[in-house]
Length: 124
Image: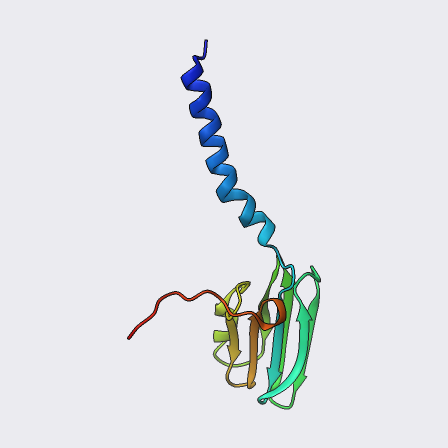
């Protein structure tokens, strides 16, 4: 049989877990977009809540395929020789980027109305 202190401890642990888990699931893609640039010029702005969307980019320099999923974007195919752009993986936080130098392709995540991401550190 559980004592009153055991029940209180279980409730406190459940509340603590909820305090960390709920914001993680609520973050999602609400208001986040990806800005795609080719040759330094704006190419497209993508709403990251468009789950399962694929974006094909063909230029004189080559071919890239981006996929929007889980509130972020990732490079899934490219015909560049080094394939480094695929190694960036799934990006989903503001100011994270994907870059394909041979194709001069740049993707950056921005938040609500261009909001700034929180700082990792401040150096003087």
